[in-house]
Image 1 (cartoon, rainbow, N blue to C red):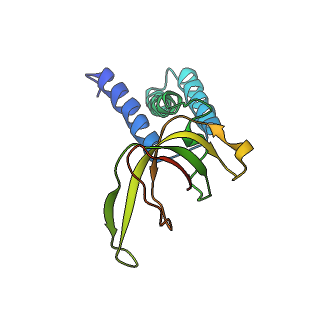
Image 2: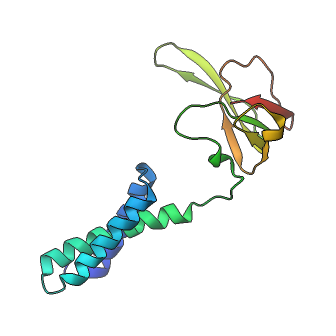
Image 3: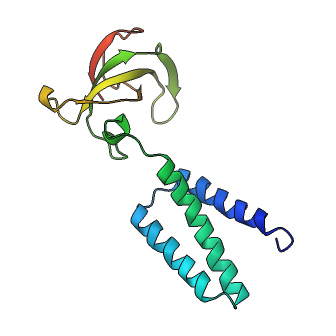
Amino acid sequence: MKQNPLAAVCIFFCLGIWTAKLVHIPLFFVYVSCGLFLLTALVSLKKQLLFSLSFSAALFLAGFLHLENAQTYPPNHISNFVSDNPQKVYARGKVVSGPEASQTFYHTKKTTFTFILLGERAALSQDTKGLFVNTGTIHILPLQSRRKYSLSSQSSLTL
């Protein structure tokens, strides 16, 4: 790496981007850590090992921040209504892909159907006044729905 320091910079930056896709850490901690590593690198310019480690960690976190900042969505995007914790989300939109069947092989063998909904409105409660206009496509897995969905059908459903 000593012969080509730009390669090391690219590797640590890309590793940060890749890690940001896999791990979700609050941005506050990433900003603070990146700042502390940069400050440590600046203070330790004469100590080559400490400078290299601090600067590499700062580059890694800068890659992490790059991905997090690049993936900002408008306030009405559907991703703002869903989270990692399961909860009911009410959505209204048009079905833009036909249902696709897939089988699950864990616990019980059963076939599930998924489709993509082009979201128009979404809310966290069934109150129609609480429906927000949203953008984005929604990959839907109806769990207990007996309703038939077809392409371009106008639908309101509970996720």
